[in-house]
Amino acid sequence: MSVTAQELETLSIKAIDAKATAYCPYSKFRVGACILTKSGEFITGANVENASYPVGTCAERVAFGTAVVAGHKEFKALAVATDISPPASPCGMCRQFIREFTSLDFPVYMYDGEGKHKVMTMNELLPESFGPGQLK
Ligand SMILES: [Zn+2]
Image 1 (spheres, rainbow, N blue to C red):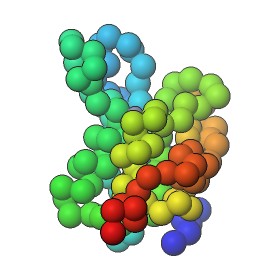
Image 2: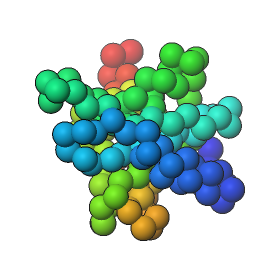
Image 3: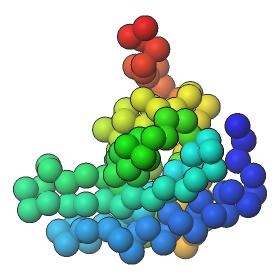
């Protein structure tokens, strides 16, 4: 399930554009995310903060939650975009959340504020991970 150049371009544009939908009045740290489903759909998310800080949710979990409740369970790639450089990677909680729905070779593309990216696999981001396979 490799990602085509066209899919990657769309994925990056949508993740970068999704930063504009972030609700981050406290940190001002905008994060956009976009997932490409196996069926070819692009589903976006952004961080949603809360006055009670720990209640806020990351862009990646908003995107995956949206995708899962829309019926998607298989995914080809994720892109995450922030305004900083070098690009930010998903937090620990998100890595575990993403692992639930992805294979170890699943690619996570991380975009910086200038649109430059770095890519890492799920296994690189969360080695020796605990996933659904452990409960079968
Ligand atoms: Zn996170």
